[in-house]
Image (cartoon, rainbow, N blue to C red; front, side):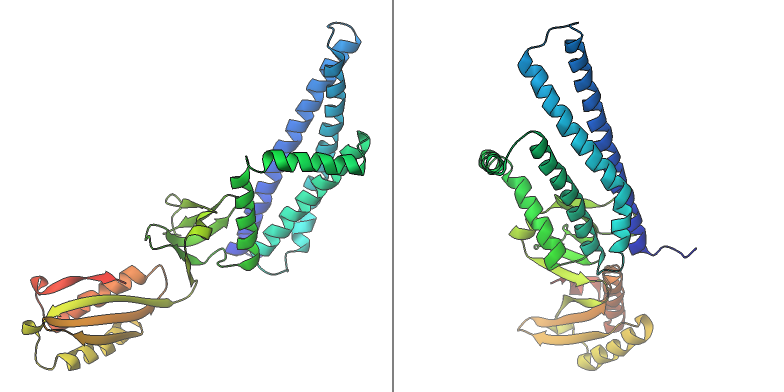
Amino acid sequence: MGKKTPRSGFMYVKSKLVHKSLNTFFLFFVLMIIIALLIIAVDERQLFDFPEVVTGTLSALVIIFVSYALATLFTKLTVNTILHYFKEMGDIEERILMGKIYVWFVYLLATLVIFSQLGIDVNNIAIFLGLITTGFAFAIRDIILSYFIWFILLTKKPFKIGDYIRVGEDDSLEGQVKHIGLFYVVVTPTPETYDDYFKIPNKVFLEKPIKNYGRGKFRNEFEMYFEIEELQVNFPAKVEALKEKVWSNLDVDVSFFLGADSEGVKITVQYKSTFERREQVRHQITSMMLNDLKLLDDQYLFPHTI
């Protein structure tokens, strides 16, 4: 049996979570059916006299719960086939979306069956949906917004699962995307561990800019400043030699750009690395600059990332 890749492993976990949710829904509907039937049976045997409106409501609820229980059971038995069918279609995000649409479609059919069994015609359905939309739209506006943003994230793909992103200008909101959910996106700054992840609410992605570093190497940049009276002879030549040394020892493509003012020289360092190694590489380049340019600690200002 072939070894699971991280992405196929994610789909396996996703499938397990879908089944777990469906099991919960099914047990809930079955429990509600049993409770409703017991109350109806008690009333029919005249062990307790319930108002007619209660028994009538319970009869309607039995129809609703049975329909949704059957829909849940059908979805549970067929969802693996659907996920497998879309296995070769596009990215994980697209398969997740298609799986969600399938589940929603089955429950929509169950809802139409319920309306038919309860004798609700098309006009009444339209009125009912209009009342529901008007009454709850304001109350659940945040939920609707989260669903909308979730749909945009999966279809427009400003980032994908596995990408390294930064949200806004806050360094604390950056890391590798692990999950794109209905209400939040799970991000971890250190993918090799599992206990330091954080959740970013979906609405944040409409409020703040998103920088996608991707999964490969991307450009990093920081600056160092040196006082002009402490500069050594042939300082530019030493900087050029340092570039070759960084390439030889770290296998990192680096560029140094010099700028000067009346008080000193600023060196802008640009290099490419993966998200995981960027801090390590920056530390190594900084150490090599200090050693090769032979400046004391109190003669330079600590570098900062731009």
